[in-house]
Amino acid sequence: MKKIWKRIAVAVSAVVAVVGAFVGSGAAGGTPIAEASGGALSASSTAIAPAGPAFSIWSVVYVGLIAWTVRQFFRTADDERHERMFVPAVLSLLLNAAWILSVQYGLLWASEPIIVALLGVLVWAFAVLRRTRPSGTVEAVVTDGTFGLYLGWVCVATAANTAAVLTAAGFRGFGLGQDVWGVVVAAVAGLVGVLLAIWGGGRLAPTAALSWGLAWVAVGRLDGPLVSVPTAVTAVVAVAAAVVVTLVVRARVGWVARSRGAGRARGAAARAA
Image (tube, rainbow, N blue to C red; front, side, top):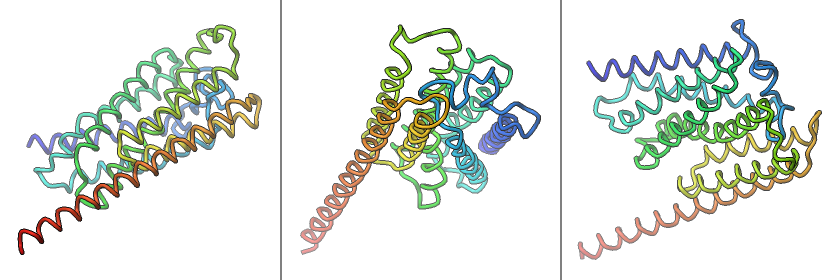
């Protein structure tokens, strides 16, 4: 009975998140996020704001979250991996909806602790996934892929949200200017991507989402009302660094796994002889 209620809780949380997404898109009578809170989160609000098309990644993330929710009703009762994902998954769905509502109601200051909490919860979920192995390809795509994309994108979204909140509060960057802060934040985001690649063993999904976000930051700074070539160049370099490190780490992890497998096979053959 307890496990059934957990699955229902996940489903309800997913519905709340999806409804929040419709409200945030403007499709359900809400104000599109880019226009809410006085346009503080628009594509030209700060030097680290991604261009509009970047947000289409939410569609992929939401499809993945819905698929993961449906999968809860078909998993085995002793699936420890999904049991350990229950709390961070539910919290991420609810925090996502809470962030949208805070922006919708003009509570931009409240959106910052919410998105920081969301980032922390997704790091928790990522830690669970990297300590456990998926049961197969479907599990790897639906669970690891979805939450990896979710984490990578929210890393970029947190940086953009923080910049928007500070700008709306009157922070002027100690007189350093948009270019300097854009370069610093883009470089930090790239560093986060590199660290995620190393910590996660070269997982592709977080790098793909983070790189997607930074690539659209570069596009936004090369075209539109807020041009910043230094920020755009730094964002591109950050993407390249995150991708290269991810591929190198992934290749190394695969090589180590194959070497260990070959070693065990030789040991078994020697014992049999």
